[in-house]
Image (cartoon, rainbow, N blue to C red; front, side, top):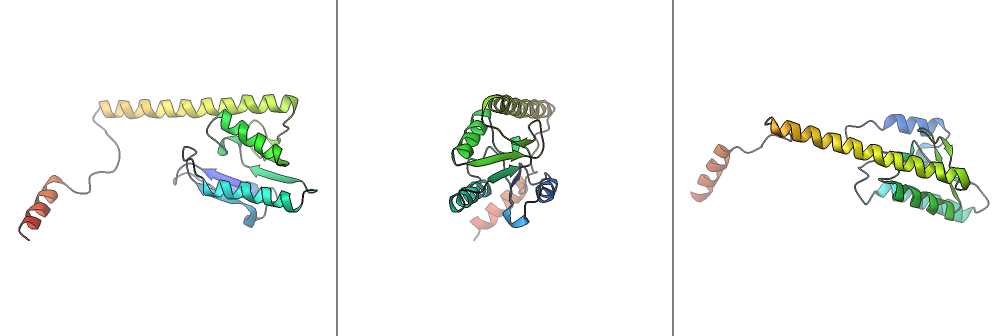
Length: 168
C-alpha cells in the first residue's frame, strides 16, 4: 500500500487507517508527506520496488498496489497513465480505495478510458486549486500582506552585528 499527502500539516492517518482496514499490514504500507511536484518520492519508489520484487519472487500470485485515491499517485494524467501502464506491464494490479474509480483498475477497454478521463479530471482539479491559490496570494500582496515567516533578523540587529564584527 502507498499513502501520501502533500504538506506536513495535512492529515495522513485516515489514509493509513483505510489501507490497514483493507487488510494491508502496517509493514507493507509505504507512507510519506511530500508534494507530487517533487520528482523524487523515496517511499513511492520503495513501494513500487517492493511490489515488483514480490511479483518476481511469486509470479503466480496476484500482487495489488493499493492506494487511497488516484490523485495520491501523480501530478498529471500522463504520469498517472504511465504508472498504470508500468504496473500492468509488470503484472501488478492497481487498486484505489476512494475517489471516482474505487476498486481494481482494469487496463482494457472501458477501464482504460475511464482511468484516462479521471486522471485528466484530477489534473484539472490540481490546476484549479493552484490558480486559486496564486490569485489569493496576489490579492493579499496587493493589500500589503506578503505572507511567509516574519524576518528573524531586523535591520537594527544586522547593524549591531556588523558593527560588533568590525570592532573585533
